[in-house]
Length: 265
Image 1 (cartoon, helix red, strand yellow):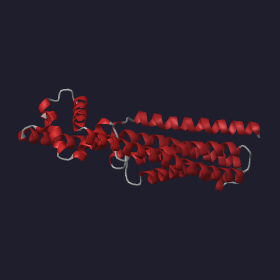
Image 2 (tube, one colour):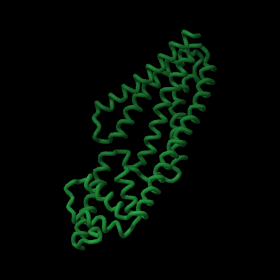
Image 3 (tube, helix red, strand yellow):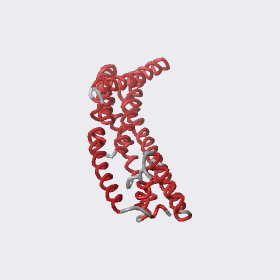
Image 4 (cartoon, helix red, strand yellow):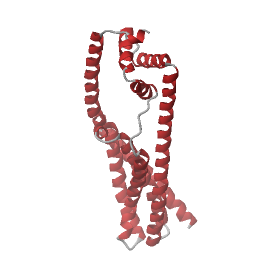
């Protein structure tokens, strides 16, 4: 088979190019990903999901309940929603991460079955992936690459899963981490609009302070979220725009809840 041939000099050159390319990609990743380059992007994504819902849904609920004129009702109802919402969001994160993990291992199992049934099929699959990455790859480069992978069969399967299927192996305890991150983010975000009601006697005053507090919080959440997601490549105007969008979303939800509860009350 042509996949078993190749010169040592081409292998050395390939290894050197791969090493240099990897170093360049790592340098670009650190510059472009910002905070994502230091923390697990999946954990950051889960946290943003939890905070996004936590900063909008409970805010809308507390604003709506405040129209009934009872601070105790606002606090009680707000806490009930916080607890149930955090549990629901956490379970959703757990099930989502479990489905992701199940799918990943099912794909790995399928590729291993292919490998043991027909090695040539795996070789051609790797060749197709390489040509999709760069149609200009020479036959010698492809043969040398596949020959190196054949030394460690597990790497062949890993290569197909990662670059052919676009899948990453889930981190250990991914389901639990996702559940705690999303649920905790929801609870933390949802607790913010409740804070003023603990320190005022008049519900109207609590609502005004809550609106001011949430306006600041929503803006900075949108601002920081964009900075984390896009890194240094994000412009100031884009971050401000995202912050204002978060205020608009939270404001519309809270205003609608207050209006309809007021009408029905």
